[in-house]
Length: 152
Image 1 (cartoon, rainbow, N blue to C red):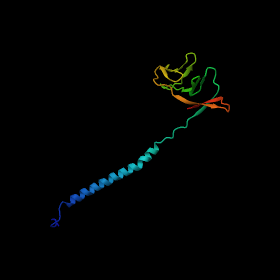
Image 2: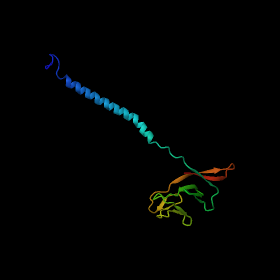
Image 3: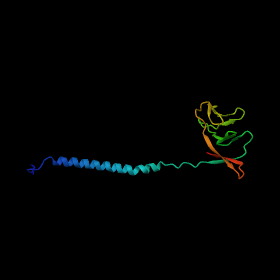
Image 4: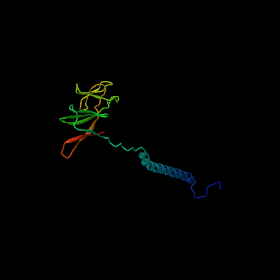
């Protein structure tokens, strides 16, 4: 049994070993790819977050003579050009901004960042504009404005 039989190739054993290892590696790669294709949607699903519903805040009309209503989360301006609602949260460090009626600008009490009534940055350490919220008018049957609805 020590010598190979005549006519048989003595190299067939290493070739079979190479084929088996190649097939085993291919099967491992196929299993890894199948697992990745199966797990990818599951991992994406676990990271999914439902966006919060927008809050709708109703401000009764008409506004005071100044045309400004200061709410907890926004400042509402009603001018001849239209209605605008800007956030009261300063983009610098999150302080609550106030409208300065006499100076006609919005100011942050913490670091004196200033903004226009339209929310555009004027001066101070905040380098971004204030976020602007969508405002719709609620009318009665005769077409008169009864409320401003701010979508936060």
